Length: 354
Image (tube, rainbow, N blue to C red; front, side):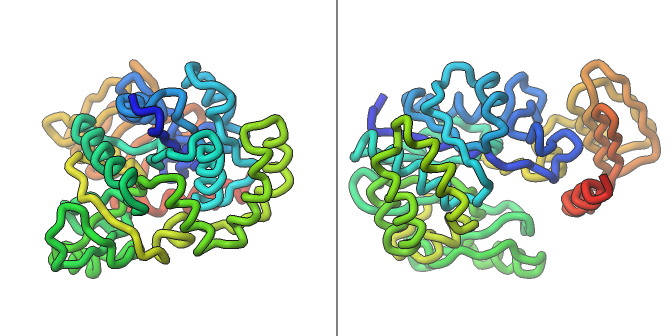
């Protein structure tokens, strides 16, 4: 394996749309959401380690998930766990980890990947990553992977590329926010829009130059701790300074500003597993299009539902169509699938009443 290859797995989110399974104390990346026997972060680590040396895979997460992470990935060292003392979105943590990696290896190229994505064709995924690494080793490109849209999804951001660009790697024209349905349909019809996967590839040199240019204050904040990184002094420096960083995503901070951003239209199946509905799409179904995770199901005139419960529990449903049914400990969720985007707000309301 190439010793210059590195990965950052982002595992700090709380996955509130997967409530009540995903909670702030035990979020979705640490659950076996698909019923495969592996949690999402375990699958992500295994996938990336096909190309990247295991010791070169760093996991970015919040302080409070350190123990869970060690239980689920016992092969990693403490040095591979990059802890955020405060949640500050993706830009600060990527900058922090990139500086740590560059101090280890000035020739490093790296992939930044969320911990909770579903990718079925791992052979194609590795092929796409290798191709991106090859490009980023040669030049100073900031690369991302775009997913060919299959329907007008309003839950994803989009990447627009130049229609006249016939090269396999496209120059990014602009990033577009999550659209309404009408706009999403226009994107599909235009044929030069891709779903934004949130997967990035670049050399540490390229991304740090971009931060220095487009986020100079944040760059200087972390650069001041360069001597402390990868030493015993790092933890104290981060505790004193991390909260001073702007709460901003890598898209807003760098990718939407830089002029050397390229997108590779991915050739693997992908789903960001952001909602119960997206999970439903990837699960096997019965003859009535019901999807079951764990447990046993008996239905009478019921279809298009997703059901999750404890292993071996019998669930009986009748006269119910297109619902989310989740039974976990002291919470039972029964909610229309078409209103799944509301679950995040409902959880917030419940927490306010506690």
